[in-house]
Each structure stands twice: as C-alpha cells, then as structure tokens.
Amino acid sequence: MSEPVPVSRAVDHGTAKLMPDIDRERAWLLTVDEAPQSYVDLDEPTHLEFEYTRRLGHVLDVVAEPGLALDVLHLGGGALTLPRYVAATRPGSRQDVVEADRGLTELIAQVLPVPDGTGITLHTADARAWTERAPAGSADVLLADVFGGSRVPAHLTTLAYARAAERVLRPSGVYLANLADAAPFAFLRSQLANFAAVFEELALIAEPGVLRGRRFGNAVLVASHRPVDLAALTRLAASDAFPARVEHGAALGEFIGGARPVRDEDAVPSPVPPDGAFGIG
Image (cartoon, one colour):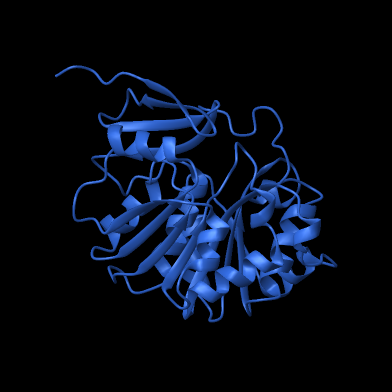
C-alpha cells in the first residue's frame, strides 16, 4: 500500500494543507495558511490530539448520559474532528456542520470523507446567518469553533450572536465555544459577559498558565440554563496530559469583572495570536 502524501490546495480563505502523521497510520493534520486547524485519525475518531479539542470533548461527554444520541450544531467544520467524535461516542446523533469555506469542505469530503450513516450533514454558509435562520429549540448542543485565519470573526463576538445561539438551543441545551486570548483578557471577558447576559450557568476551561496571564492560549466557554456536571468536567480536565482548570461561580464572576456585552456596532475580531502561539509540534 502506498504511503499517504501531503495535499495542498487553494481554498476560499487561504491555502489548506493536509499532512499525514507518520506516527499514526490514517491520521492527518489540517492547516490553513500554516495555522493548525484540525487533527483527525480516521481509524480512531475518539483520539483528540489538540488540547482544546479534548476539553470540548470532555464537555460533550458530560452534557448527557454516556452514549445518548444528541442533536448537535457545529459552527466551523475544519476536518470534522468533533463531529466524528460525537458520531463515535454518541451513535445515532444528528449533526449539522456549518462551514463558510466551500473549498475547504470539498477538500475534506474528497480526501477525508465521513463514512455513510454517521448522521453528519455539511452545509456551506455563514455561521451567524445560519444560527439566525435555524429552527428555534432544535439543538441539544451548539459548538462554535470558528476562526477566520487565527481570529474569531467580529460578527460572532456579540450579544446579538449569543442571543441567536440561545434561541437555537433547547431549554436543556448547552453552548460551548473555543476562544483564544491573553492577559488582560479584554476579549475573553467580553465574551463571558455576552453569555452571562443570556444564560444562568457559565464555566470556563483553560490551563492555569493561560488563566494567570502567562501566555496566549485557548479557553473553552460553556453556557447553559441548567447546571452541567462540573465535578465530572473538573476531573476530566485535570486528568489531561496538560491539565486544565474549570472556573465557575463567584471566581468566574470576578474574572469577568466590569466587562460589558458587545454591541454589533462595536464588534471586533478576537486578538491576533503572537507568532508561534499555535505552532505545530
């Protein structure tokens, strides 16, 4: 059998590259304009290579009974790492994946296709426009991992977007998002303020070094109207190779401080990561 070879292709929003992992037979790294976007193992879809994807996976594991099928809306597609994870861990789930880059979607469908019968449906659309049009109360989970290059687009950083996301979720639904920031955390605090204005329950998962302002990094935001199993989530986050902390309650309120929700007219993208913040290896 021939060895897999790298694939490079111009897509709508840059140059996408798929690079095989020499250590895992059918595993691939996706980059767009050299920024790592996804890692997927076709033979082992429950393998989550990136730290932030493992934290999102932990939330997906605790939002409902193990193995229970869910209706999930993914904003941002990449190589479909987390849709594949949900299909493997929660068989029978119905998943809609919204990706704005048609060229990227076509590349993944050609090189790393999703097996038939997984319940994953791909859509080429703007994430906010889709969320505003989607049926109310149609999702158990809304997972946002949308980056234009290495930044969250401005129109996905506002209170109006948070309200649109809440509308799509069922009363017991959970919103989770991958965000990135560094001290003094103006962006991250504003995002927490957006969702605190809409949901009663908030949590934030990140490495202690990031939360202490020592470096730029990812943080996973969790928002819902009902409590999630924070004890289980804390155990899972702490057991990782790179342990993370789960902030909630009064401590998270102190972190938010005086941050205010973001109006559409004031919206800006998330901060530009410093060089090497999301390097490979």
